[in-house]
Length: 175
Image (tube, rainbow, N blue to C red; front, top):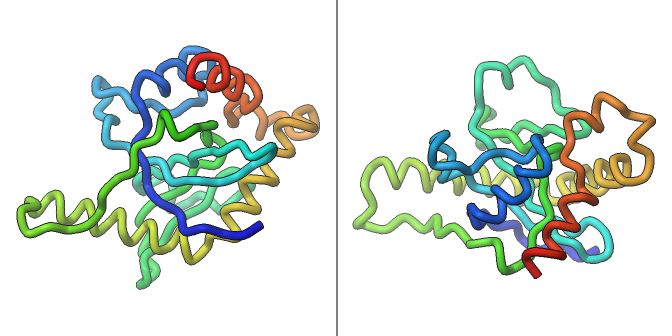
């Protein structure tokens, strides 16, 4: 598989709400929970040329103690500081209708807060692109476990989105 560079995306809020209505593991992007700016990185081709976005989250104190696992990866800056995490268990199927690229180019008119945020996103994206092969392998491996042998990893399956069910929502309502 030829690797492309990853980009960051916002997702259509209505689409994410549709998915969250059928799967509680879908991460919220609700303005009510202050999550409307949550970016998703993508794209990862899983199987049958289905695209998935893997949610990127800010680091929390609990992440410091967590280890990278089948469904979780820590994201570091070039100095080794934890700057984010990838939640593979919460990856969701997407198509071009529901993704909106994020512009992370810093402009003179940006506020200090916007500059900081764009620089953080740029650093997270750099790490992701430096680790693109591992991200793709991890996403594919997790997808295969959850869709083909979910009973063999019950705890992992409970943490993951129901990929096949979400694919049906995408196909039936958003294609």
